Image 1 (cartoon, rainbow, N blue to C red):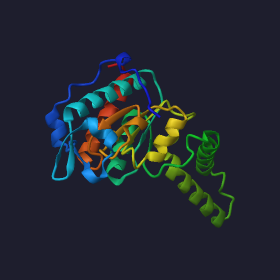
Image 2: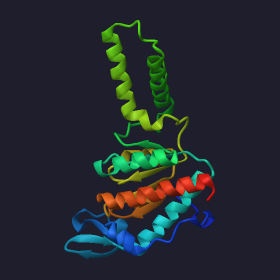
Image 3: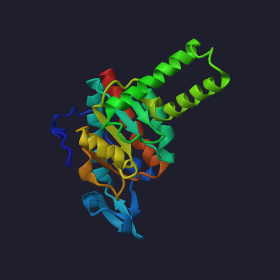
Image 4: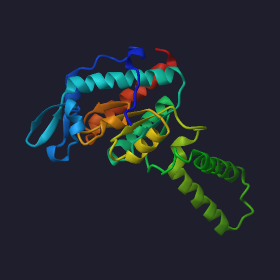
Amino acid sequence: MNQQIDLSKLPSKAPGYDLRDLLEAGCHFGHQKSKWNPDMEEYIYTEKNGVHIFDLAITAKQLTAAYNYMYKLGKDNKSVIFVGTKRQARKVIQETAKECGVHYITSRWLGVLFTNWPQIGKSLRKMLSMESKMEAGAYDNFTKFEQAQMSKQITRLRRFFDGLRELKELPDAIFVVDSEREDIAVTEANKMDIPVIALMDSDGHPDDVAIPIPANDDAVKSIELVVKQMGEAYLAGQQGK
C-alpha cells in the first residue's frame, strides 16, 4: 500500500535542520549494500566501503514533513502511538511519549492489535479493571496463591498495554522506529488505513509508509534525534505554538 498524505496542506512548523547535526548523530549511515532495498535508492547519496550513505538533504526534507504532520496531529488532538521495541529505542520512545502525552509500545507488538481491536480493547479494559480492584483491596479475601496469580496476570497484561492505557479506539497514526523490525505493526496499520511515519534504514520499504524518514535506525543518537523531534512536534501542536 502506498500511503498518501497531502504534504502541501500541512502547517509549516518544523525548525530548520542543520545537516551537520544530522551528520554528528550518525543519521547518514545506512546498511551494507548487500542488505539494501532498491526502493530506497532515491534517498541514498553514495556508497562507502560497502555501506550506503543517505543524502542528508533528503533526510532533512522528510524529517520536516514528518514534523509538520506530527504537529498537525497534536493540534487536532489526534491519537498517536509511538512504536520502538529495539533495545536502542525503548528508553527514548517511552520517555518522549510520556512527555508529549502519546501512547507507546516498547516491549513487543501484540499481533492483531489493530486488526482485532474489539477483542484487544477488552483485554486492555480487563487490565485496568484488575488493577483498580487490586488497589481497592477487592482481592484481599482471595488465597495467597490466587492473589499471586492475579498479580502475574496483571504483570503480563502490562507488558503489552502499559503504554496504551488511555487508548479508547484505533489511533489516527503511528510512528515507528525501524519499519522492518516493526513490520507487523506497519502491515496492520496499512490494513486499517492508519498512516505510518517511520524512521527507516536502507533496507526499508518506503511504499509501506506515509512519510519515510531515511536515516540510521540503529545508532542511539540518530534514533534519539528523530524520536525527540516527533515528540516536540506533537507537543508544539497541542500547545498551539
